[in-house]
Image (cartoon, rainbow, N blue to C red; front, side, top):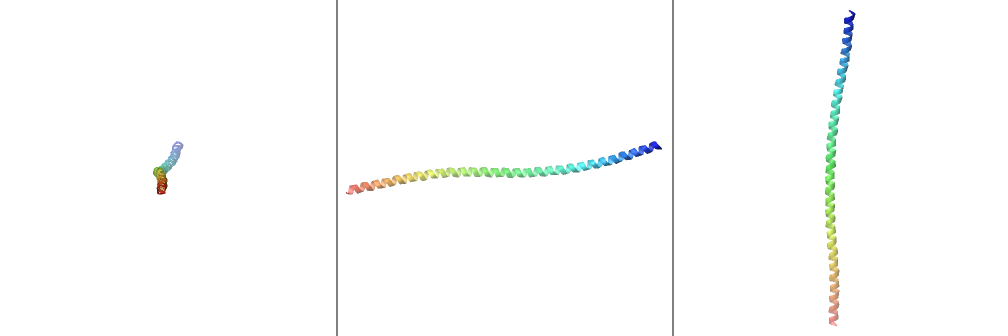
Length: 107
């Protein structure tokens, strides 16, 4: 009788260990599912952050291009204004010279 009792005790011990192991496996599977969900959420958030970053960089590049374009236009306009001022000065001198010559002819 002692031998079957020892076998039953061993079977009960193995059954308890098996149940414990089964519970641990289920817990690990649940933990893995939670971790995979976290990884998925993190990947989604990273993709959103990347999209925002690249959109911001495109806006920055567009603003830089616009700034450079405006600066080129400003430089061109400054040159035109300088040329206009030189022309105005030259015309003023011509008017003074013509008036001076006309004055001298009359006298």
